[in-house]
Length: 445
Image 1 (spheres, rainbow, N blue to C red):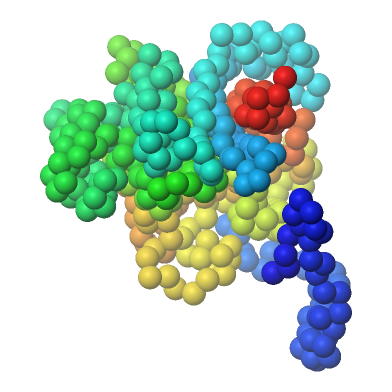
Image 2: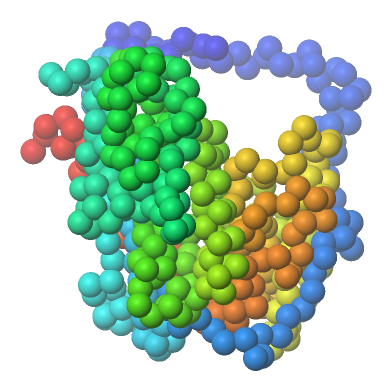
């Protein structure tokens, strides 16, 4: 690695000639030649299981909620730089009747303002990452307490109550204890979790007070005096889940028992929680399965805009119908075996695909020749079988597919209008701008 530039001296330049010897290898020469050669095929060698669908007879969902988030790390100018991260997540509800009147190609700003009036909530916070120590204590303790204070701060504690609802599975007749987690003070696992509905409790090993928010596991990403950028992205992802499940929780307890199943809930990004945060996947799957067995299914989708699945879809979508506008749309439900073999191109894995992390399964959708997308749809309980899932396993798939065509935005490729609107609130690129945040940090006027 070269030396980086400082205040007095320039950085070290990378070598321009050090790589020439390797080009003498015939294998490298063949690689370079093949890299520059355009390879196209006239058939889908992955044999994606596309099927056309007809939404006739399936009632579109009448209500829509969408969630999105963003974060931005900001550094000061001195050396070593101080660094903080601002996080913002948003939740919006969209009046489906008003949305149907919007021109999806050229939406009028006044129409958008009418849709967005009093329809959105947002949550925001800030974390110290590097070279900052408050008078209250270390970065480690500061971030723990900021998380404890931030989640209940908005919407009359609604998002925090959703955390408790998931952690203690409060939809059941008798709530459970929270998932097990590592104590942030002594590091020993609290196998029995916290007692039902507790906000905090003493650690059974070191007797220090631990919070319900410690159960999520943010402290496992932190050091005593610094934290990585991934802490902010993980907090954003967890808050997106808590905000998404807040209207689900409220609909579940509503006197109108049909409200939940008449609503489409949309998350920007995959329905996934990784690493220590995946402990929330178990109660999420448990609720979705419970709601399905009670005849009150929750219709949820996540949209993946980038990544491995989006790249794979882009490479094979031209082989799928429809070829012309007016033809029936098509979809492809991706089994675990298909994902392993054709998308990830990986050997047999020790654990089945998505067993610990995913609470939604993958679906390719092509609406017309120019509109396609990668969606995640929940199934409830997880099945490790290679042929799982099938169309019948995905909760409310017919009604979801009947609703999506009316949500398509032609402003961007494969865009959904509710996500587009939620992103407009949550984006830290323009509201507020990262430059404003930087000035706020360094105290400039």
